[in-house]
Image 1 (cartoon, one colour):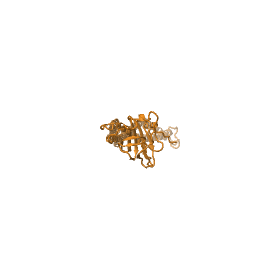
Image 2: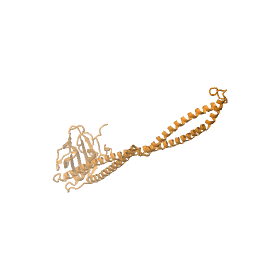
Image 3: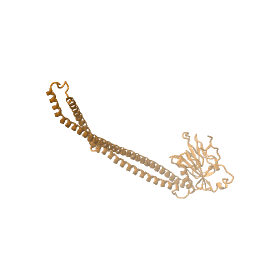
Image 4: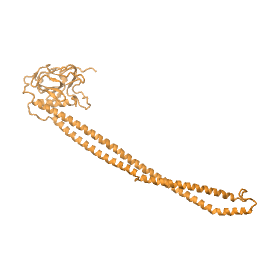
Length: 388
């Protein structure tokens, strides 16, 4: 909570209430607006908390799904696990079949080699003596006897080769199905984890929004309480006084020949009427602000009657000076007030004092009001803008 944000609204209500100091306490429009804003923020806070609770429940559900997926994989109950077992069995069968097929091929090759040797006419000297006719006949008989067996073995090899091709296609199909299933499980896990992250961020943001709304509610509550205190202070400020013997600004040169006011503190203001507020909220200053050093005295800008003098939470001392003709001067941010409600002060009279602190520099806020509407002080205060 800063003076720059709250003070214009505070002094708006102060100006409205000062005009009706003798009336019974009433809720000002500014307080009503703050209470409406407070109710709106409370609704926003409840909605954010509900959203956070929903997001947390969804996160819990997603975490349960992820845990079930992991547990199913650990138990081997998933389609991926079953397909992995099928593929492993096919690979074992393929390895065994290849080994047997290789052995049979080696045997058949050896037998065919022998057969080719025996079918030579005459047989080689290494096997049959060319002069031994009996051995040659026996060799021919052996060749004829081996031929059916060799043909059977060759057919068996062809059948094994076909089985191997079928088995290889089954293994390829099982491998492709396994990859698809594993990809599906990975995508499912990634989707669940992504949703968990998103819902967690959503819950965190909702909690942040609820916290911000709670802080705004507290700020609005403090503002409204401050304005109510000012309302009560104005209605009990002092015995009724009259401004009949004060010069009416309407006839004292305010709209005729300019009648300059006394600057409340030395130097040029750091912010003037109409300047953009530094908080970037798009608002504009409703008065002037001086940054002070060394605790200078605060002077009454014009002859007036003190309508209100007292502290306000977080804003130092506030003085409301009644000029007559519907005009009021507001001075806020002082450390000490040297004037009391109902007192008549002269132009240039010391009515307060600023704090002596230099960091941060105390700020004096000055505002002129005509029938509760702010007026540009430059019409009655002439100061140069600071260089740079």
